[in-house]
Structure formats: structure tokens, C-alpha cells
Length: 193
Ligand SMILES: [Zn+2]
Ligand SMILES: [Zn+2]
Image 1: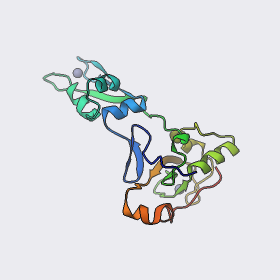
Image 2: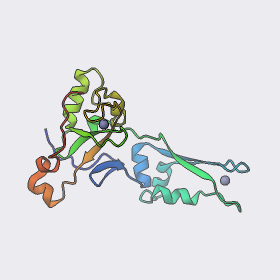
Image 3: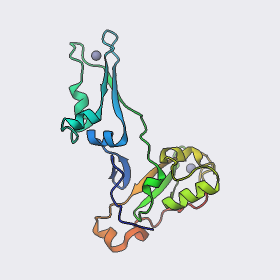
Image 4: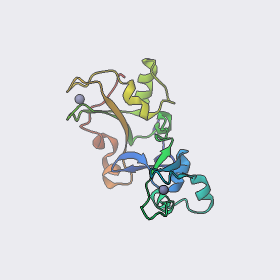
């Protein structure tokens, strides 16, 4: 079951062991996000739409989206009040994109005040659990998981979960030596959803 697909999905990177959206223009294109801007200054109200596919076509895919945003700032004496936002704001990350990898876990974290409880799932176990509970399947988005978890936190009793993806770097000597068992040891493992 555990193959060699060790690169994160297109447009995503592992930063300190957690999957997050990459910041380059090409990454926005890969995730299907455009960036929109709207100037909050009353006299201006300028609108901007940045299409990452256009920029990739011009050879600018490796620039950071932040750099591109700077180039669009309003040339006004009273300054620029452009606010940028990605559209869609939350790029989809489907569970089935993450299967078949020994170095990946879904993490559910409790957001109760001051509570640090977390639990990790093997992706396949999460998908099976969702199916069994009639709550989801391989196409379910990671970002939707938090709301699907209805069990209370064993520490603070709140039901307030958020999900992210742990993605261990398999290039390290530590991983090569001991792999998943050591890397994910000490983390509470989830079974039922
Ligand atoms: Zn403006
Ligand atoms: Zn808690």
C-alpha cells in the first residue's frame, strides 16, 4: 500500500512537517486559485485580479505571489490600501490525494481554549472511518474534517476540531533509519470517526 509518491500534491509544500500552500505564482496556478485585490481607499476603490496562469505563461511562475502583489499597488500620494485575497480562499485538499504514503498523517487538533490535545490518523483509516460513519469518502477535503468530528475532546470535553496534514520529510537520515514508527511515536492514534 505504501508507494513512492513522496512529493506533496502540486502547489503544496511541507514546512516543518506540516503541509501548507506554497507561496509561488505557479503554486497558486496548481491549486486553482486566483488572487483578487480591492483598494479600501474611498477615492480609489480600484480592483485587481491576478491570474497565476497568465503569469506562468510569461515565465513568472517561480516568483512569490507577494512580490506580484507589490507590483499592483496603487500609485497614490496618500498610499495604497489594496487588500489581497486568494479565490477560492481555501484551496481543496482531498484525502485521496494523500493516500499510499508512510510519511503522512491526518492530524485533528482540539481548539478548546488552552487545550493542546491532538490525534493522528493514517489517511486510509480516516477514509474508512468516514465511510463507515456515512460522513465522507476519499473525495472529502481535509479542511472539512474538523466539522465532521463530533466526539468531544478527551481532555477539555469541547467539540471544536481542526484538521491539518503532517508530512514528514523522508530525505532526513533519521527518517531513513527509523521511519514512521519513530517519527509518529508518542502521538495518539485515531481509529473511529
Ligand atoms: Zn487604491
Ligand atoms: Zn481539548
